[in-house]
Image (cartoon, rainbow over all chains, first blue to last red; front, side):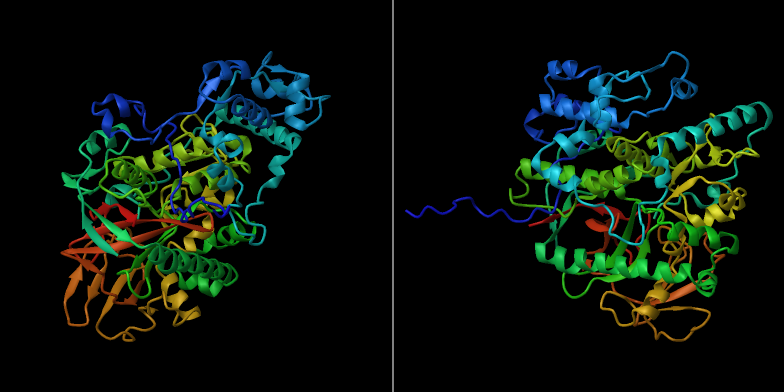
Length: 204
Length: 388
């Protein structure tokens, strides 16, 4: 007997391995409940779930420990960071901000000694959007592909927004402006879509 | 490519409602139809649809670049002059786009012929990207399709991918979504895109186009709560945005738009004669001309389309043997093009049209629409497909 690989050659697959809806199918779990269980399939419709902590995520026994941890780290990276407590509170409200714990700082910036502030986390979401780091092999490959071809600087537009401090300044500016505007200026509306009734719809 | 009768899933209407697909029947007429499916070979999909779609997409990007650097071309496309800089700047600064759909006449043999681009406000996205995929999985599970059956469809996965990429570049990962009031199908399509955005980790509030607000002195449009709209996905065409009362505000404000302003170039049927001019003889293109300049260039066997129209409206065709067919509509206020008539493939009494999706810069799936008439309209049925 030859000892070569007996794995059958799998043809290329042109469809995604797994899809779900996060909010559209409100009664997604009704899929099995609507009778005829023999007609249900391995198509799964799960929504992102929210957890307070990694421990709670693990205890819920929906996701693996590593999925919970990776999702937590990814969430921490998304939390806005501020140079000062005042700047954070200006955005998120008095008393709403904390300094990160060592673990949070490590997860967010790779350094455990962060001198920055963030809104206290109310919890974090674990779901399919996290499968880029924690999901099955199929989605892992896909999520790491570049979305855009390298055309000019396509996609790198507006990179200034990555500068957190700049962002804060902009926001504070906007907030001041908008607070003033809310008091003074009336909002004009119906400036778009006015001709719609004549044409019914715009999709194509 | 075959049209094959197949048993419907017994529970599909219930499932459709559970999954938010409320427009599977429109005005009492079926829109989603699964009593048949279109069957392709892998070679047909990859060689005849996927590869040409990516090639044509690159040609389109090349043309966008040319138009952006030419006032004369902007003018030929009847783009409003006050938008020229905005269009140019959005392209040069690399504002990303989300998606588009090319419509092909393809019979399973020979070259797929590009009928038009829907690169600004394409719909039938949920049906193609999600519900069609569920159909395939369930048809396999129920034994109506063989286990090895497949589908050319990674549309939703790519959308999530592209949305995550866009989200990384948006302030607070927030993207507003908008469409007009009183259109169930468009609201559902936007709802689906919001769903995709949420799955990609974005914050995705909704506002109707009519409710978008403008406040003197602010640098962005605002939503109903007067919250800033820093970035907006609109299922609403650029030519209308520009004509609307707030149109002239667009260049003055810094709200980011999806699709970006440069998509105005590709949502315009004038792009078809430009493509033919620049890539004359390309096997996937049909001869096309600006009507005003070349009224008599095409012998009988042409289709006449306004620069701006949707859902088959105001399209008139004359077959080579003199049969005339036309769809009325409101789009009479723009210039016209003529395109060589390409017979739509017939399967029984049905004419089939292939919509080939591009997300980011990748071709990633198809949806098939069929109609007993030669012109595909908003009432044409969506029929799923499989690779077998």
